[in-house]
Length: 194
Ligand SMILES: [Cu+2]
Ligand SMILES: [Zn+2]
Image (cartoon, rainbow, N blue to C red; front, side, top):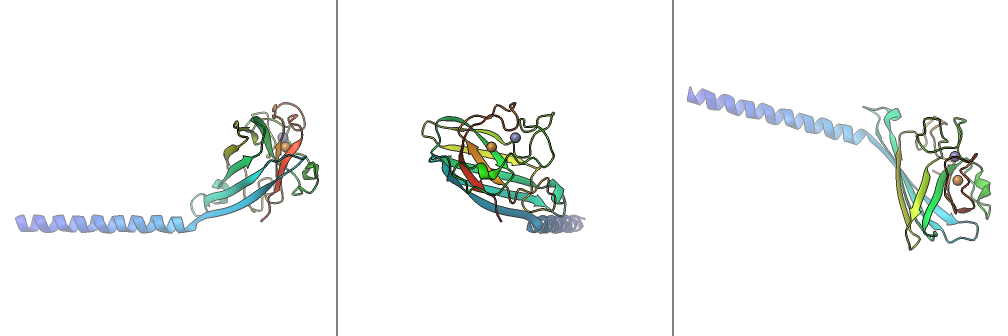
């Protein structure tokens, strides 16, 4: 009896071991199919400012489980040369930062024809209405923003951020004034290109 018990105990352990190896292999398989795209946008000074830095956009998701619809884009912004305090940051509709005042970037990216507002406002908002970031006493600012409403290079024109630009303003976005939150001069601009 004792021998049999020991034997079946070993069998159970072996089965458990095999099962956990199978689970690990399945997880590995899913991870291999995880989609991750990263791109960096260089922010250049505009309107005679010194505001520069870079922004990375990373799309993370899983085509197998969540399909592309469940993907998220994470935006990490690092800027220097700002005046201390809050500054508006948006995605604008044209991927053109050539004008010295940044106006070549056009208005806010608004593919769904909504009013300007705060991100996630129930009244609607522009797809470019990221909001404000805060610079410290040295003029440095960091902002991490994450959303499932954007994609990097997908077919949905209401989500695809490629070909748009990032604009940082001298002033604060009041989330109310139309069409752009009364945020003042454009002090930094960068084009989102593949
Ligand atoms: Cu703007
Ligand atoms: Zn807006």
